[in-house]
Image 1 (cartoon, one colour):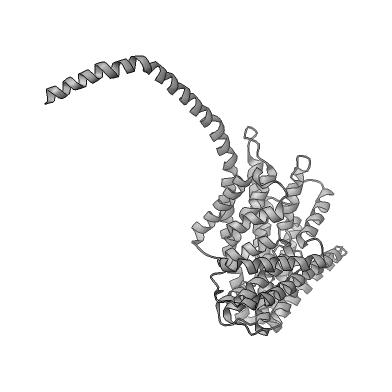
Image 2 (cartoon, rainbow, N blue to C red):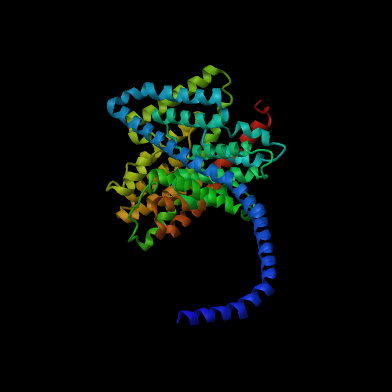
Length: 475
């Protein structure tokens, strides 16, 4: 049997394989060489080019995710410190809060004037200034120094009870990280759009701050750029995903707020939703106008004494609100959102939205670092909570009103209804009420445009551009 198999193999080898080998092997070798050359060409050109183009975005996104998590931890500990001081002796805030307002303002004024406030207008201004002729101006708006001052100033502020958030600052921090990476690229490196780097950085910062990847993408499209999305969509989406995954791997899977109960809402709830959206949007746009007016008048305070006095008085006002009215007037207000959404205390006192409103005005106009995203969300949540008490709504309907109030107030500040709706949707995993959230955002945007045609951020962006255009670049 073995001998027979051997003979068959010999016949196959001599009659089929050898002629095939002698005839087609040279052609096969030529095809192999041709394919290898093409594959090497692809490897050397397209793949390498794509990898080099993507690498700065990936590195920036990883660093952004790490810094955003560290900043979130520090901010949370600072807010816990505020609560600890309040329970220790609330009267200490009449010393701590004015000093915190003064120190946080001094850090900004002394070391990084453009680290004041939220940070989103600075990033928007940077994107607009990211042209070859004006790129040198960006060192004042986005830098490593701004990262440190932004963090330290806001931490001091919130420890003293300042009504600020960390989300806007995280966006400026992320923009600074991406800009620094772009600046460090060597001469031989493929040219990468500076504007696209900044846009991706801002979107990654928002995604890492809130754990809302879709919100980061929509924010970049709706708020930051008029550039055609297809020009940089891959880098933007990759940056958002990597920054979010970095934060997730450190913190574990989490939602910014949680899973509120929104099932079983009534059909007629659309009418209270429209009302809360209109009120929240009007209140937010009015708050923005008041802050802008105060900032404009503050420029008339030319002496150091008058500026120091303003900080001390602002600190005393916030301390008074916290001590005499409610401890809920301190900090970002996240505990208001959590308590109203996840406890039986759905309906808070009528004055909470008022103290949140004025606390935000006083804190933001102080000139320190600190965002307005979280205070806006908490102010909207408090309005929704109070109004749900007026209508004596059920728990599910109350949660819907609170979430729509959050969307309405945030839209009134940002004029980005879709970003606001997507953010609240992702923070609470409430996809079943997306229709109501969209309606709330569009309604708030409508009434806000009647108060002011331009958003709060747009006004600040133009101020920064006008300011920085008159200054000399950093040496």
